[in-house]
Length: 193
Ligand SMILES: [Zn+2]
Image 1 (cartoon, protein in one colour):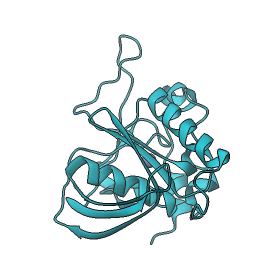
Image 2 (image 1 turned 180 degrees about the vertical axis):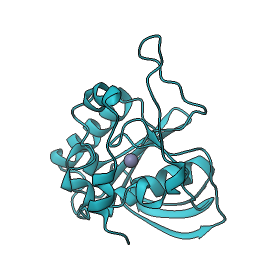
Image 3 (image 1 turned 90 degrees about the horizontal axis):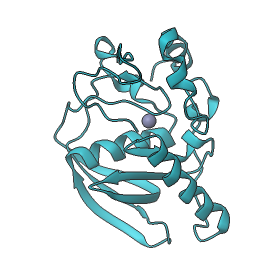
Image 4 (image 1 turned 135 degrees about the horizontal axis):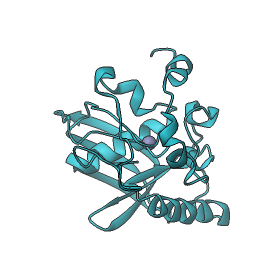
Protein backbone atom coordinates (compact mmCIF):
# COMPACT_ATOMS: atom_id res chain seq x y z
CA UNK A 1 0.00 0.00 0.00
CA UNK A 2 1.27 3.44 -0.86
CA UNK A 3 1.68 6.22 1.66
CA UNK A 4 -1.94 7.29 1.77
CA UNK A 5 -1.41 10.51 3.69
CA UNK A 6 0.78 11.78 0.88
CA UNK A 7 -1.83 10.73 -1.65
CA UNK A 8 -4.55 12.53 0.33
CA UNK A 9 -2.46 15.71 0.35
CA UNK A 10 -2.28 15.63 -3.43
CA UNK A 11 -6.06 15.65 -3.86
CA UNK A 12 -6.97 19.32 -3.70
CA UNK A 13 -10.42 20.34 -4.93
CA UNK A 14 -10.58 23.32 -7.28
CA UNK A 15 -11.94 26.47 -5.56
CA UNK A 16 -15.15 26.24 -7.62
CA UNK A 17 -15.98 23.04 -5.79
CA UNK A 18 -15.63 24.29 -2.24
CA UNK A 19 -19.39 24.78 -1.92
CA UNK A 20 -19.93 21.15 -2.93
CA UNK A 21 -17.40 20.09 -0.32
CA UNK A 22 -19.22 22.05 2.36
CA UNK A 23 -22.76 21.15 1.30
CA UNK A 24 -23.31 18.25 3.69
CA UNK A 25 -21.24 18.85 6.80
CA UNK A 26 -22.39 15.59 8.43
CA UNK A 27 -20.16 13.73 5.98
CA UNK A 28 -16.49 13.55 6.87
CA UNK A 29 -14.27 14.70 4.03
CA UNK A 30 -10.85 13.61 2.80
CA UNK A 31 -8.14 14.66 5.22
CA UNK A 32 -9.97 13.51 8.36
CA UNK A 33 -7.96 10.69 9.97
CA UNK A 34 -11.11 8.63 10.63
CA UNK A 35 -11.19 7.86 6.90
CA UNK A 36 -7.75 6.28 7.21
CA UNK A 37 -8.50 4.28 10.35
CA UNK A 38 -9.49 0.61 10.45
CA UNK A 39 -13.00 0.54 11.94
CA UNK A 40 -13.95 -1.66 14.89
CA UNK A 41 -16.34 -4.59 14.73
CA UNK A 42 -19.81 -4.06 16.15
CA UNK A 43 -20.46 -6.45 19.00
CA UNK A 44 -23.96 -5.28 19.93
CA UNK A 45 -26.30 -4.43 17.09
CA UNK A 46 -29.60 -4.07 18.95
CA UNK A 47 -28.44 -1.23 21.17
CA UNK A 48 -29.91 2.23 20.69
CA UNK A 49 -26.47 3.57 19.79
CA UNK A 50 -26.08 1.18 16.86
CA UNK A 51 -29.69 1.57 15.76
CA UNK A 52 -29.38 5.36 15.83
CA UNK A 53 -26.15 5.14 13.85
CA UNK A 54 -27.83 3.02 11.17
CA UNK A 55 -30.83 5.36 10.90
CA UNK A 56 -28.54 8.40 10.76
CA UNK A 57 -26.50 6.82 7.98
CA UNK A 58 -29.63 6.10 5.93
CA UNK A 59 -30.81 9.70 6.30
CA UNK A 60 -27.44 11.19 5.37
CA UNK A 61 -26.99 8.83 2.41
CA UNK A 62 -30.37 9.91 1.01
CA UNK A 63 -29.70 13.58 1.76
CA UNK A 64 -26.43 13.32 -0.15
CA UNK A 65 -28.08 11.40 -2.98
CA UNK A 66 -25.45 8.69 -2.56
CA UNK A 67 -25.55 5.01 -3.39
CA UNK A 68 -23.74 3.92 -0.29
CA UNK A 69 -22.22 5.12 2.95
CA UNK A 70 -19.85 3.65 5.52
CA UNK A 71 -19.91 4.60 9.22
CA UNK A 72 -16.45 6.24 9.16
CA UNK A 73 -17.91 8.72 6.67
CA UNK A 74 -20.15 10.05 9.42
CA UNK A 75 -17.23 10.04 11.83
CA UNK A 76 -17.98 6.72 13.53
CA UNK A 77 -15.22 4.12 13.32
CA UNK A 78 -17.50 1.06 13.34
CA UNK A 79 -17.97 -1.69 10.77
CA UNK A 80 -21.37 -0.69 9.39
CA UNK A 81 -22.31 0.08 5.79
CA UNK A 82 -25.57 1.06 4.12
CA UNK A 83 -26.30 1.11 0.40
CA UNK A 84 -29.26 1.52 -1.88
CA UNK A 85 -29.96 -0.67 -4.88
CA UNK A 86 -33.27 -0.76 -6.76
CA UNK A 87 -34.90 1.65 -4.28
CA UNK A 88 -34.14 -0.66 -1.40
CA UNK A 89 -31.75 0.23 1.40
CA UNK A 90 -29.51 -2.56 2.63
CA UNK A 91 -27.59 -2.57 5.90
CA UNK A 92 -24.55 -4.72 6.52
CA UNK A 93 -22.83 -4.95 9.88
CA UNK A 94 -19.37 -6.51 10.13
CA UNK A 95 -19.33 -7.35 6.42
CA UNK A 96 -16.72 -9.75 5.07
CA UNK A 97 -16.04 -10.19 1.37
CA UNK A 98 -14.77 -13.44 -0.08
CA UNK A 99 -14.61 -15.29 -3.36
CA UNK A 100 -14.10 -12.32 -5.67
CA UNK A 101 -14.43 -13.27 -9.33
CA UNK A 102 -14.21 -11.50 -12.66
CA UNK A 103 -13.68 -7.78 -13.05
CA UNK A 104 -15.62 -4.63 -13.89
CA UNK A 105 -14.33 -1.18 -14.82
CA UNK A 106 -17.60 0.76 -15.05
CA UNK A 107 -19.26 2.93 -13.94
CA UNK A 108 -16.65 5.41 -12.76
CA UNK A 109 -16.56 5.69 -8.98
CA UNK A 110 -16.96 8.68 -6.75
CA UNK A 111 -17.09 9.13 -3.01
CA UNK A 112 -19.22 11.35 -0.79
CA UNK A 113 -16.07 12.06 1.24
CA UNK A 114 -14.25 13.36 -1.87
CA UNK A 115 -17.08 15.27 -3.57
CA UNK A 116 -17.02 15.59 -7.36
CA UNK A 117 -13.91 13.49 -7.92
CA UNK A 118 -14.40 10.50 -10.19
CA UNK A 119 -12.14 7.74 -11.39
CA UNK A 120 -11.92 4.32 -12.95
CA UNK A 121 -11.58 1.56 -10.38
CA UNK A 122 -11.23 -2.12 -11.22
CA UNK A 123 -13.49 -4.20 -8.97
CA UNK A 124 -14.54 -7.82 -8.80
CA UNK A 125 -17.64 -8.41 -10.87
CA UNK A 126 -18.95 -10.95 -8.37
CA UNK A 127 -18.34 -11.39 -4.65
CA UNK A 128 -19.67 -13.33 -1.73
CA UNK A 129 -20.66 -11.25 1.24
CA UNK A 130 -21.18 -12.32 4.84
CA UNK A 131 -22.21 -10.28 7.82
CA UNK A 132 -25.29 -9.30 9.77
CA UNK A 133 -28.29 -7.15 8.99
CA UNK A 134 -29.64 -4.24 11.05
CA UNK A 135 -31.29 -6.65 13.49
CA UNK A 136 -28.22 -8.84 13.90
CA UNK A 137 -29.50 -11.62 11.70
CA UNK A 138 -26.88 -13.40 9.61
CA UNK A 139 -26.56 -12.41 5.96
CA UNK A 140 -24.73 -14.52 3.40
CA UNK A 141 -25.20 -13.96 -0.29
CA UNK A 142 -23.57 -13.67 -3.67
CA UNK A 143 -23.85 -10.27 -5.34
CA UNK A 144 -22.83 -9.04 -8.77
CA UNK A 145 -22.29 -5.92 -10.87
CA UNK A 146 -23.18 -2.57 -9.28
CA UNK A 147 -24.13 -4.06 -5.93
CA UNK A 148 -20.79 -5.86 -5.79
CA UNK A 149 -18.99 -2.63 -6.69
CA UNK A 150 -20.76 -0.60 -4.02
CA UNK A 151 -20.07 -3.17 -1.32
CA UNK A 152 -16.37 -3.37 -2.26
CA UNK A 153 -16.12 0.43 -2.09
CA UNK A 154 -17.87 0.60 1.30
CA UNK A 155 -15.97 -2.29 2.88
CA UNK A 156 -12.76 -0.58 1.79
CA UNK A 157 -13.87 2.41 3.87
CA UNK A 158 -13.98 0.15 6.94
CA UNK A 159 -10.32 -0.67 6.35
CA UNK A 160 -9.25 2.94 5.82
CA UNK A 161 -8.98 2.47 2.06
CA UNK A 162 -10.38 5.06 -0.36
CA UNK A 163 -11.17 4.67 -4.05
CA UNK A 164 -8.33 7.05 -4.92
CA UNK A 165 -5.94 4.35 -3.65
CA UNK A 166 -7.26 1.90 -6.23
CA UNK A 167 -8.19 4.21 -9.12
CA UNK A 168 -6.10 4.43 -12.24
CA UNK A 169 -4.53 7.77 -11.36
CA UNK A 170 -4.73 9.11 -14.91
CA UNK A 171 -8.51 8.57 -14.81
CA UNK A 172 -9.17 10.81 -11.81
CA UNK A 173 -11.19 13.83 -12.87
CA UNK A 174 -13.16 16.59 -11.15
CA UNK A 175 -16.77 17.06 -12.20
CA UNK A 176 -17.08 20.82 -12.41
CA UNK A 177 -20.26 22.81 -11.80
CA UNK A 178 -22.15 23.72 -14.96
CA UNK A 179 -22.39 27.29 -16.22
CA UNK A 180 -26.13 27.52 -15.60
CA UNK A 181 -26.27 27.13 -11.88
CA UNK A 182 -25.63 24.12 -9.72
CA UNK A 183 -25.94 21.40 -12.32
CA UNK A 184 -22.79 19.44 -12.80
CA UNK A 185 -21.49 18.42 -16.14
CA UNK A 186 -20.58 14.80 -15.92
CA UNK A 187 -19.96 12.67 -18.96
CA UNK A 188 -21.54 9.61 -17.50
CA UNK A 189 -23.51 9.02 -14.35
CA UNK A 190 -20.68 8.18 -12.03
CA UNK A 191 -22.05 7.20 -8.66
CA UNK A 192 -21.27 8.51 -5.25
CA UNK A 193 -20.80 6.41 -2.16
ZN1 LIG B 1 -16.75 6.42 -0.43
